[in-house]
Length: 426
Image 1 (cartoon, one colour):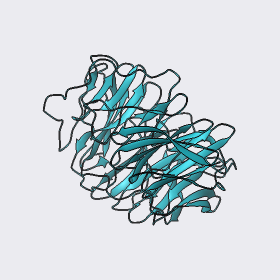
Image 2 (cartoon, one colour):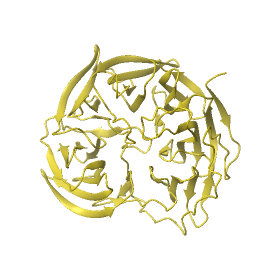
Image 3 (cartoon, one colour):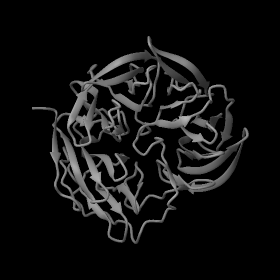
Image 4 (cartoon, one colour):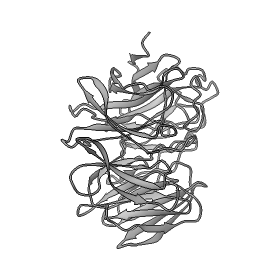
């Protein structure tokens, strides 16, 4: 039988059934949801994610030049675990420690100052900004432990503790029975559709991403109609290994694709691409056991062709791969060893990003070296991949890599180590 099949669900505005694999859907009563309406956000608010874009594509928009910038250090009490970056003229850095203590710091003219003490929050963080410092979005009471809500038109959408996807706009939220894992993240397909992993299962016990639960399905949700409109179900023993798909136009044809990592105990992991209707477009090569860490899609190639940046087996092979989708074939066009974008057992999958960060018109991939003490900016060349420049850290990376585009063609990039965060602002 094929490893996946597409199922179009005609149910809109009601709970959608999902295959839940070995773990099944939580048969207990639905958890107590939020009361009333969600907190209002200004219409001009811009959301802030640890993975940069709402689509899950870790691509910094615009351009800037941070290659020669001197780092500014922001000291914090505790071990930095997550970063959010926002700003316009100045950059704002929300630093969340492993204990959940969150503070926001403004960086201007080479100096930083503490501007907000948010207290203790739940991880991972999500926020928004209008002017000045960002606001953090509080998780609803029944939001799952290792994910966060995302803004939708008129409210919030989130994964509940029992795996439901909840659309909260008023006192009667809509609940969709997706059976999402507790760390599943909702990502934007477009202004009215979200994608999320569902059908939680323990049939693949790799355990690289924080637990031994993965996803057996991929769902696309119409937030306007409040229903699941497409479900991709994987046949056992295959799973989706990750916390979310990556949404991007991979081949530049104007149509959005869903990039996933598919894995099983026999063949290991490989990259698989679907269209937004749930049809398989292409599957990349298999190299045996181990994970594939999909990071970002950008016009990496010297001629501007779009490519997908992946780290193959970041705990073993530690090899950056660039994939290209051509004529429905997904192939690796360049590789370079020596990079580790993820720490085994961590739920932080935001360990790399792309952007034109030296102002040359070509995006670079920023990714940690094997020891995670250095961030290399990798540039695609006609011959393969070359390090263009690098950022030195004073210890192993402990946070996600993130950044923000600023006014006047400037940008800032930040990374955290044991007790502080370094920011390079151009």
